[in-house]
Length: 294
Image 1 (cartoon, rainbow, N blue to C red):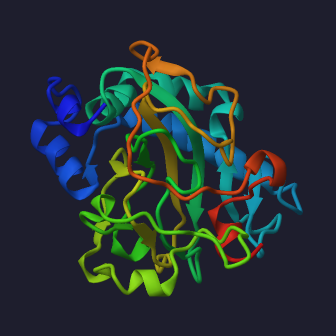
Image 2 (spheres, rainbow, N blue to C red; image 1 turned 30 degrees about the vertical axis):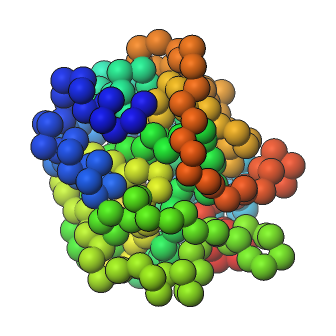
């Protein structure tokens, strides 16, 4: 569906102004959309997995561990494919609390793509360099949206998401090296053409939902606070968007319709997209491993 088509449907969870802001800027943040009960449930799951990670010494299918991870001081960078790790993560993915937000931004028929839980730890933290999402998991159109949930307060010192307004209407940049290996970063020469000074910091309290279009240029600085910043992320698309390369982190639910009906016709956006590696052949760690070279 096109943005114009989507906006013809009445708003459900967001206001019409918030929806229009999303399509104009490529992102929106809305405080307090997720009820406290759900925030508490999801936080409990997060803390249980962090506790489980203490027994690990290296990354595996579920956990992407930072270089300083230890049993005494767990430093998980990402819990991968959360909907495959515990039923509550999938229950939330299908709950109208969240799928109504997705429907406001992709249309009434909503398809699930992927999910993860990222952590930004105090200190040096995990800097996320400027990038766009869709070059890693291209679709037939650019409806895919990443919906993030803040499980705790995110202030400027926590290294919040930074999004460049209007960049979703600009070019898609390559995110690989000269030899074709995946880097997950927009090259400096390309960034020289982007107004990074205009980037907005998406802050908010527990239950805040941040929505980022798949073409939007975004990143984040280090966490300068004394507490970890967990960010639960789900990717949805309109039902008429179809992935044309294997996803980096597939789940058992990738491609499931979580609201409305399956599409009978694919929407093909004519704008080109770079071709990523075949993740089914070479595998994928996380944006952290890609950007930091391992």
